[in-house]
Image 1 (cartoon, rainbow, N blue to C red):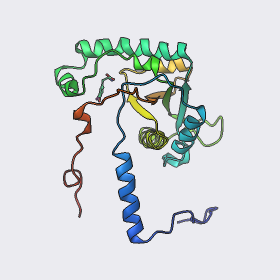
Image 2 (cartoon, rainbow, N blue to C red):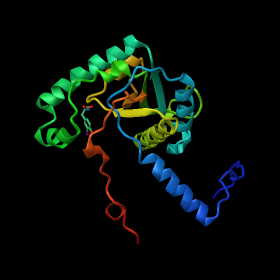
Image 3 (cartoon, protein in one colour):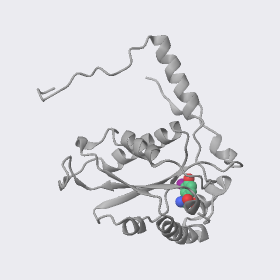
Length: 224
Ligand code: IYR
């Protein structure tokens, strides 16, 4: 490593091996209860929860530390409704055949359709944009790197932070998503990545059994 200005790396918890295993197990037990929720209550959730979750997402590893993301947080019912209508317009075509038979068959056990009424109901939409240009200083127009990967990791951390705060979430990816740029007033060099819908589930919310089946460790790992 070259000699660049540096600070000590000291803030990792000092755990025994047993404590590490227990901590990893505890987090697994927590995060395996995360679900993609499509049945939201309109119960309000404080803005501070969303702010802190976005701060957590903003610490994600990313290309050259340019932090190539922007989060548009929508609670205005009119804007949420515009997003719903535009998303449903795309989804109508998608489910009417644009997706193709194989994709529609893959989605059948999840039971999704073009009704996105939860977009009106949930208190928060977090629309995530990847910035092709930017840099660390406000107003920078440098090239950004690994924008897709960086935003993907940030979205994962955002979902995790929201789940830990007791919120239900949904990653919603209408296709194509260009309309989000216009509704959210973002520039042409930003690419919509996904909408993260956040709020509380209805009292009688359910999730498809299909979505609860997770591959075992042996199937998702190779140890060399
Ligand atoms: N965006 C659509 C379709 C959809 C696609 C995938 I891949 C999913 O895992 C779930 C849904 C929709 O939201 O209905």
